[in-house]
Amino acid sequence: MTHPDIQEIVYSEDRVRARVAELGAEISRDYEGRSVLLIAVLRGAALFIADLAREITVPVELDFMAVSSYGSATKSSGVVRILKDLDETIEGRDVLVVEDILDTGLTLKYLLKNLASRKPASLEIVALLSKEGKQRVPISCRYTGFSIPDEFVVGYGLDFAERYRNLPYIGILKPSAYQD
Ligand code: IMP
Ligand code: MG
Image 1 (cartoon, rainbow, N blue to C red):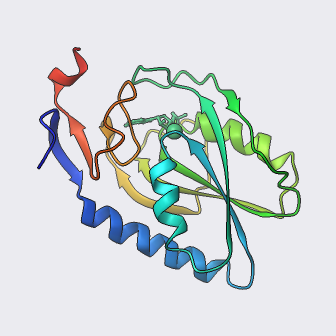
Image 2: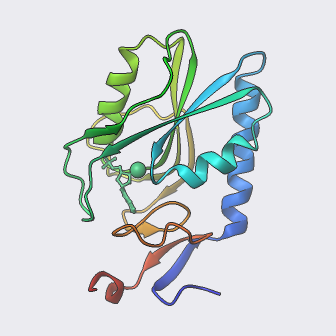
Image 3: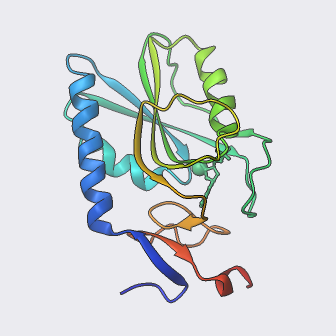
């Protein structure tokens, strides 16, 4: 059943699952013979990394970072703070940053610069969603799940004011849901 605050489902649970499986297969092919260190950017990418990791057949390790760029508003501030750093060093590792959504790119730009300075063997990005025409800084995203129009979406890890992350699909909120 669709959540009463959701106006429209953009990607159903089945479509998300199928696309995540395709991404996992592609990553497995590309990293054949190597192991990959997946780094999720909390909290939005938590659900995506959990599903993606299970679709990858080469050896996988996981680590997590938390940054803040949004607060609870729906506009990117461009101000990024590291709230939680990695537990392990990444020097010489094949690193794949797992993001929920690429919007302005400001968060990832900062993060990539920071991670690159730690000298990984390779550094790539997989983003489940990418907003068309919204990127304010060029980011080369190796893998993208879906390109979406510029609308605020929730579900499958994505939140509005920390809610709706547990919806199994990705959808657009009803305007009334922003009010309380
Ligand atoms: P950026 O720095 O503008 O690329 O912002 C990226 C971050 O903003 C994402 O990791 C999300 O946490 C958040 N974000 C951007 N667009 C949306 C959206 O449509 N729904 C929920 N969160 C979003
Ligand atoms: Mg995020």
